[in-house]
Image 1 (cartoon, rainbow, N blue to C red):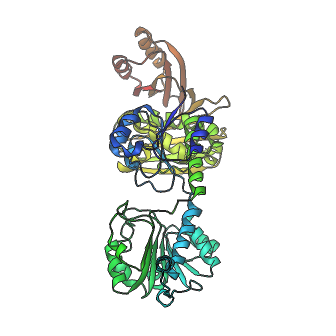
Image 2: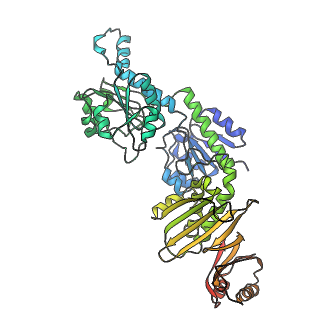
Image 3: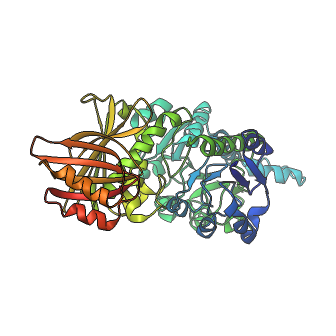
Length: 529
């Protein structure tokens, strides 16, 4: 059955054509997102959802979307999507961070130049029959300092364009490395220095708890007299009432605002000020940008639903279309290793160490770790745990996750080894993928062995003494459990040994209890894969 995707906002019809060409059933309902109840009622039948900013994907909507696997935002901002709720449900949230980067950067430059030369005000005055040359005296941007808050995709393009205007560019961005700053010709500074030096201040950062109201009365007071503020990023970064007062007092010369804390912005004190230029969130509004983001989100959703490739996800490691088939058997291995340990631990997990050895360490280990954690947590937290939600749940529960890459060791070209510490125990298991593409266990409790994963298994730690195998086989036989495979390993003759027994049916609790009572047994657990 073909995957089904709902497009609930106005999106270029190219997106529909791309999805349909790849065999996906598409419902294009561009006004549905405006009707909250109708939108929620439609969601349960879809595997994928594509939106822009008009559709509000709330926690309630996500709860109703029983089959939803991926939400694609055609654009960069995901303020209209409850990402934590989607993550908790195991739904991937994607955006298109590069699709409108050039368009938004160009709008920023246009707003800066319009602000510097008072172009909108002069246009309005001239069209009214006035000729007020002296009233609209502007300033040059040549050799002025542009201060960027945020220097990611869009910020770096703005920097490049500003350098073409021979501006000095400084940036405050905790994630900007000195090497990257030198590469793009930007001087990295701290926040207060940026405020003090900027002639023009432009914001290019997401709206988070840390960045909300980053430009407030205190920040504005630290700026030089006559500086100008531009916000084409997100509403809420600037305290609009504080900016209003700073402009009214004459400390700030003007502002150019494309985004507002409340949108659509019908009323706003900034509208009263002649020194302020306003546009209705036009940063991404070009024909090219809308086409770009539509094409990108359609391809990303199709890639995920059809091949498992993940691009530009906010809550999941990226997996390219080329990586997906290579990773698939190792993702299965990682998940089953997690399931193995998850079914034998009896107390809260404290530390998780994942060792990737040999050629496995060259793969996308972020995806593998996510799969492993999903398997590890599922026996305790249920089937809703998956690759998307597991890393978040692990962090919330205070688990320490350590990922280690190792060179090849032993006879295997590559393997994954998992070690989990709880309050009172330490468990470990290792596995690899053979040439046939099937995952195998190659070590349990530090003891080498080799076993395929079976749907129903019995894991036993015992003393290596004669009579054990016969006694356990008798118990299983008397219970009518047929043995499909019997795999053994031991540390040394007469020492500790492990056994993995695959059986055709689940091991009943009473049978497991009989096995546990055997004199040689140190540990026994029934496993399901």
